[in-house]
Amino acid sequence: MKETNKTCLITGASSGIGKYIAYEMVHRGWRVVAIARRRNKLDELTEVLGRDNLIPMVCDVSEFDQVKDVSTELKNNNVCPTLFFLNAGDGTEEDDKGLDLELHRKIFDTNYFGTVNWINQWIVLLKERGGGTFVATSSIQSLRGMPGAAAYGASKSALNYCFESMDAMYCKDNIRFLLVYPGPVDTAMLKTNRPLPCTWKPQEAAKYIVRKVLRGSTKIQFPLFWVLIMRIVKLLPNRLYLRVFRMK
Ligand SMILES: NC(=O)c1ccc[n+]([C@@H]2O[C@H](COP(=O)([O-])OP(=O)(O)OC[C@H]3O[C@@H](n4cnc5c(N)ncnc54)[C@H](OP(=O)(O)O)[C@@H]3O)[C@@H](O)[C@H]2O)c1
Image 1 (cartoon, rainbow, N blue to C red):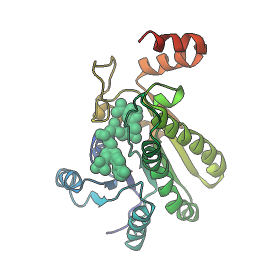
Image 2: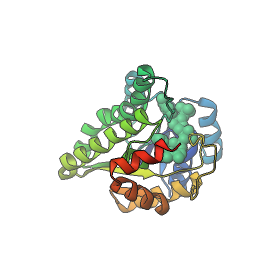
Image 3: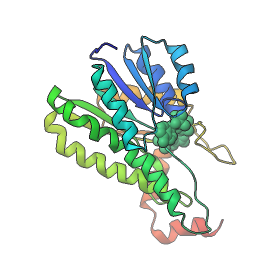
Image 4: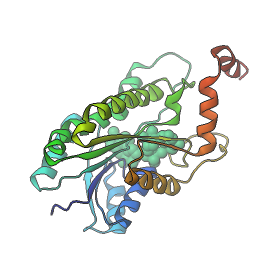
């Protein structure tokens, strides 16, 4: 493995948005380190994008030791990404039969710690090397509490705060922390009975994210329809907001 300047790392690269971010980055001449748990999906992606362009690495991002081992292996082989798409996510919905602590822990381990584990492993090196960029895939759902998404929304809100705080702390070191807030995207994670209006294809979402990230946008939100809806929802007084859910 040889080091080039244009190397990025993508978590959750085996499907959905992350997989198409890998396509986009390779087409733009970047080498991609692709991270996920399903080896067969990573192998398929390597076949399509080519061994020179894609380094597949099996890793459960919620396991700190696995993130550490993968990071050490990359560093030992002089592969040092400067751009990290920290996109792996668990979107398991909750029911109203009580609060499942195990599920809350699992979702935080993937969505929150599965993101900050990578920052922990790489930020010092990026600082020494003069800068870099971390991009977290948050969610438009983190902007106001939604039923069935207590753990998911909370984990993404925690990421929002973490990234805003880290961006303010490290901008002087040329290390940026960007947040992506997708609305509905047609992937395995989007489990709805009725199709939602203005749902984007993952290819479309990936193209948009990559274009905005490479331009340095700090807050990336889409589709516009859902961005506007969420702005209105955020402004609704609590009584009105709850009435919508009581009617269900
Ligand atoms: N789809 C939407 O409507 C939507 C909306 C807002 C935000 N998002 C966010 O977008 C991101 C990508 O999701 P998606 O929609 O593209 O869904 P997806 O197709 O289900 O992709 C999820 C990805 O995360 C990986 N992953 C999950 N847990 C992991 C773990 N513990 N370790 C390593 N990789 C793990 C999966 O790979 P393996 O199973 O192979 O490990 C898969 O590649 C997520 O963060 C999600 O919260 C999605």
